[in-house]
Length: 147
Image (cartoon, rainbow, N blue to C red; front, top):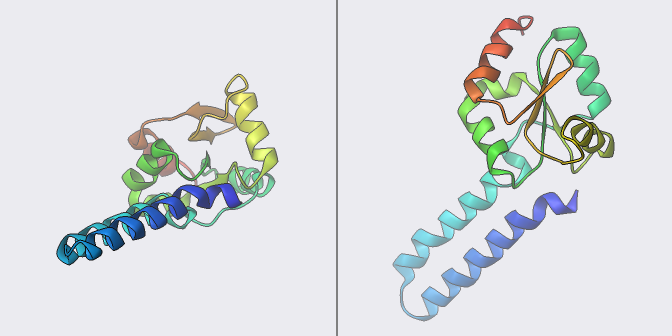
């Protein structure tokens, strides 16, 4: 759980340090622009940018029931963030499993990726797909059972 917050914490601390340095040098306007930018980057790279995490077992059970894909992800992954942002509101209909919070999920991803923890790994009807195109995921979601 802690590792998911390392990058966002570093971004917040770095932004604060840069903004403080700018204010001390008399560049308060530049600090007022950079600090929110660092905070935005921290928020986007945090677990808060993703729908609520559920465990791997629960995600599989729900997917078998409703036919919706399961997405294995981790915070700080730019490809996971790309998938999440490109799916927009549809992302909430997927089952998101954070591999850093669930050892069984990490093992499932390693099994699907020859020992690597490559994310996002999207499982549709029991078949894993590594870093699929967001439009393909949207099509899979549309063909699943209605929400």
